[in-house]
Image (cartoon, rainbow over all chains, first blue to last red; front, side, top):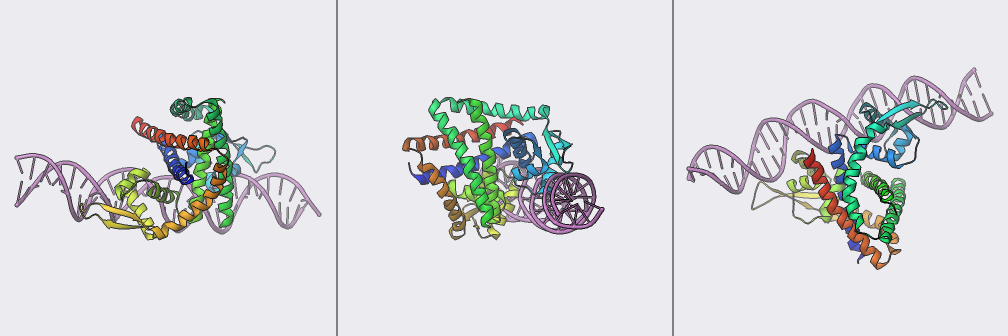
Length: 149
Length: 149
DNA sequence: GCTAAATATCTGCGTGACGCAGTAACTGTG
DNA sequence: CACAGTTACTGCGTCACGCAGATATTTAGC
């Protein structure tokens, strides 16, 4: 197993993921950024504010405001002014609206489950650990790229 | 190891990849789509035409033309009319221009290599196989999503 | 060989996501 | 009670995108 093979495959893998994300967005009639945001709202720990969403998505604060505007208009989230700090705006997902997205995920998830079913317990654990490490590494790489420029 | 854990981690993983791609694009002063396209040009088998690029990226033919315009203007590719079918336009990467991109990839790749170095031969093989299967599955899922609508 | 249909790419135009820079509302510190 | 710092929002210009139609070239029908 050559490192180059892995690297090449990684890039093909990345490309496939980008297209997959795009396809999900097209299917839901949303912008890829919006799907990305809804995703983050389900996997990251809350609570969320507009500013936190800007951080998570990498958008500027202005663009994050517009993003929340779109999600609110489409009924995916609601805005609540924070009582203790009235500058803040808490953004909360609407469970009923999220259902369609979750259903799509679990429908697509079936294909994934079938794939994972072929692996042993140990192999699943390895993949899981690898994903966690990759997420962590990505975070570092992103920070590194931002600093360098 | 619960399937749900894997699924949740997968989505965090996907989100991280999307942001990573964005960060690479920002760093190079390009749009994410352009980076995606350049990536595809290095991992997919050629030759490439404008239409093939439209397929690979999921863009319409018009948008693919504009994409190639941008890449050509930035010096990453050159256009050549196909001699046998003069409707076609062959799009060829310019190796010197690709060098910057490749250097960035291998610089970032060092972090990845360090990560992969912790794995045994067998574990690398598993990850490699998993990536290939995922790429294939993504392709199917994308086709499925397109048909369903 | 000539016309019609099909194919590959390009162009005009409207929509909308984004960054930037400035604004308004609110907090807390002296 | 000023004054700096923080949080979210608002014009405005730019540009990527899809759509629909235009142009050039190839292929099929007769």
